[in-house]
Amino acid sequence: MALLEVKNLKKYFPIIKRGFRRKVVGYLKAVDGISFHIEEGETLGLVGESGCGKTTTAKLIMRGIEPTEGEIVLNMDGEKVDITKLSEKELREKGVRRFLQMIFQDPYSSLNPRMTVRDIIAEPLVVNGVIKGKEEIDAIVSDLLRAVGLRPEYMQRYPHAFSGGQRQRIAIARAIALKPKLVLCDEPTSALDVSVQAQIINLLKDLQKEYNLTYLFISHDLGVVEHITNRVAVMYVGRIVELAETEELFSSPKHPYTEALLSAVPKPDPKRKRKKAQLTGEVPDPSNPPSGCYFHPRCPYAKAICKEVYPDLRNVGTDQNPHLVACHFADSLKLEGVGTM
Image (cartoon, one colour):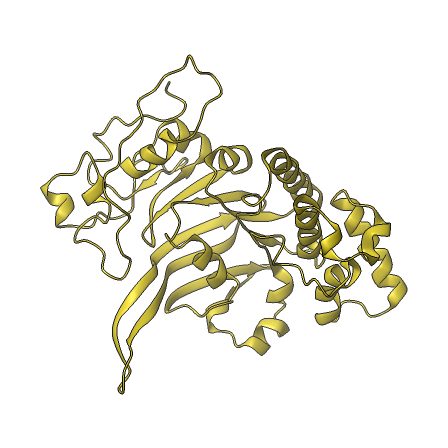
């Protein structure tokens, strides 16, 4: 059952010319017509270079920013709700704020330094009117701290007293306080040391089983994505260029951009050599993307049609195991994945 369905989602930021008469002279297409779904209980990874629209996608799903176009459909106890059509009041009345939660990238700026750990974790419970009594709040906060591997007596401390990994555990406790169905993880390990990253990833996996959580996991680190996700969507300049099951995408990529990303994944065995995909040029400006396929100026396999026609996102897999890719030559290219060394 699809817990979340995103259909043709777009977010265009207007480019305004300054002066006596301010006018819109163009649009920055941060998210440009993406579609995907997330099944209940699974983890979908969203990967791509900085500026490709990953975090904007998460903010749109959270309704932190308003979409330009498209649908965001949640399956809430069997009722499908398009939250793009709801006002802020209706979002609260429908329980969308309890259904969706988010873990932010930076554990240092996402926690209020003036609030104790108790107040930080209890805030969503109080704001949403779940509980009001002090003793009940203390009991729930204690349980949540234990669930993320922290001591209950820490609840009276302030964020400055904790390390980065501990702060992210506090942020995770806050995110699961309302027992949400879907949690959006916006690069939750990128600001942490490698050893701490592994602890946080394992914690997220344990909590997923315990609380029956569904994740949208945004990351630059493909090694982490391979470890935690069931499926992976690859974004490039605001569009999804490939989407497949994790094992399939890592072993047999169909888009040249995915091959380039995978070639940069370090491997611990120095004896196992593989070709590194070479990309030329820079990421295109989303306010003025190239004609045809956005990736063609950097693609070593590009041909004339790539410069003229943007390829549709089509299935080159099977109905049981779909593998979506936006490339004219996905059927004929022999690309190298991390599982083919």
